[in-house]
Image 1: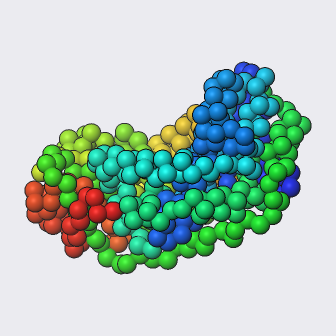
Image 2 (image 1 turned 135 degrees about the horizontal axis):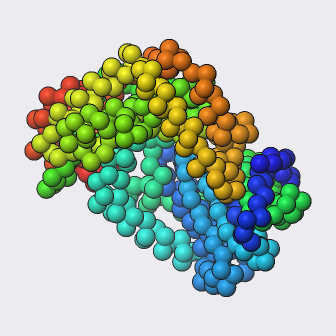
Image 3 (image 1 turned 180 degrees about the horizontal axis):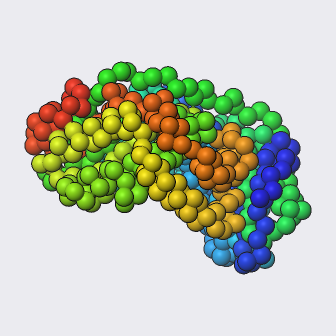
Length: 433
């Protein structure tokens, strides 16, 4: 991986590979949905999707036809820390793809009819989330885990926030953030460094060089203390989709390597404690896991499972007890050894292709981390001791402040959940957010 100062203040990561005549391009605009104005949640998503629906002299249909004619792809993804424009083309069609991507960055059309169409389509996506119990549990957990935290606000939006989005606001946001010193560029595949620099120059030459908005202040201010239980009421459920967790450290915190061991040993492998206790011994859920959310700022430590409705309460009680024991004692020596072997063995699968290596480098850059931070984590695992991991657990795990979200039928599940020791219950309608 070659990390370079890109043209006109941008940052560039290049991963050459001649394995196939293909080139991948990622253009990350730092900021993302966490920067949505309060009350206008969904604005970054709307602006990014709208920018892709026609640019330069091409309306949406002509733009899509041009990509199809090249056999190329150019897609938008919207995260909490960045908006990413990702492209793929055969080497012989790379220049044409770059021109299309440059048009999206510098000259999106923001056609009024596409703006209105997108506003009609987004509520349908919101309905799909509400129909999917797992996605709904994640939406509500994000919302209730740490009230007021920027990562807790929906990137998709709500009915009321979508109604406030204007075409002019979307265009203004894109112009403000699509500037050179706010871009992280990644290029991988059948290119050398010189050609990658030339591509980066073409992508940025029509953009303002400076003027990126200041980064969002993301601190680890504690959420309200104590356990809380939110039952998201949905009729005629036979299961409960469960989420548990609280605000944790940022990806890149000094405890990151130790917490990777915790993640793997507690809920990241089939042999992990959650899987063994919830699935193997009791058969309460097909799967159970936990994760440290990867983000630029402090984000959630989260656990999840889906149980039959009649065992939702006991599963919640057991999960909270297991988590409290983990926080107090850490992991065993055997768990540390097994998790370390698993993580070291798994990392090559995340670095197997030029595209994967480039994307990890771009993500680290958008998180404000040193080049190669994530790829270098396995090297930190070898020196970790049981006490190192225990110390990380004491510093970062807060079992007395866990927020539990259950998407289920309240009148059936509430009594069992109330007995789980998860804190006072709040019942909300599934479509209230």
